[in-house]
Image (cartoon, helix red, strand yellow):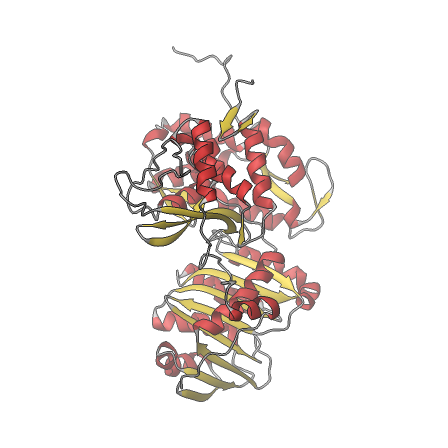
Length: 499
């Protein structure tokens, strides 16, 4: 057996790489919201509990837990499959009407968004339904900035589907980000707009694609719907009004409704998943935070020999009846990155049902090292500079790979630090130049990314990187070829100077 081999439950892998590949294949073969088969569930449970005992005992534990899985009622993120309503929704994508409760309606006419917000905000926040008739001078896209600023509110999530979007609209939405009035933004534009205005795409990306807060999708749609979530309030804004000025009389309705919001959010999210234009990565640190954030107290999973009844106790030590139970394993969306698949453990914790994200990569590789965390924080310090460099290059099309000379598109390339001053070399040089002890560096987190608590480190690295880095655009394929050689890794033959 290879010295790199690892055993997880009843399965032995030649290396961590082969183990990662195995679990990634399990993840990829399941759709969002899909329960794992019993066999795949055993492998995931064995991985989750691999440190709790010898592999053969962990394998028995996994087998017994799966044998005792209960029905996963109320755990499917999309539907409860046992009800007639859910069957209708799943089959036809319709939602059944609920009993109508009278809501006072307000009909208004405006030609100015600021005046509209000044006079109507209290009705909107009081969850009244507002029917609006507006003139062609009313720029609907300005509503969100005016509404958030006027009422000093943070919009947690804003999803917009519209035929088109102007640079003025982009500027207004960027102001929401810059003023910390908006957490997440998703925009779906029509394929017609994209075909005829693709030259405006760099401006959209440059101003809105910040800190993993934005997604842009293109689809064959003509809908004009905005979904706005503020705290526990869910607003649906829909009608004929264009996001930009149309020089025509338009109408739209603002309604606070959980059911209507959830209905429209579901199919908007599907389009965003399938037709997104921005590829996003998931941070291992964010995964770890997600795994641990819901832990109310330390739990132990006691492994005991299998009894004649074939039962293994799950739960807290010394409990007469197991109060914590693992009910199933499924694949679903990451809570922050909708296009990213994740494993989830479904369980009952302290008598309450819980759905906890599980990182197979972290379970196999362990927590990131101090050096890896420091390097990611350095990258965050200069990510805006690197993004602007890429945007600048794409203002002069066609763009060619600096290595292969092939013409490449935005989504097919990466910004590379030209050797010998690779990013790894720059980071290590910075550490030496500033005599830093990375084990003592503290971090905070900004939208899943590590950030230095000490702003002076950020400022110093930003300036150090400016002086050292030589950037270029290369294809993703060429970047993968370079990735291994670009890192500075210690070897057994390395020598260290002591004087």
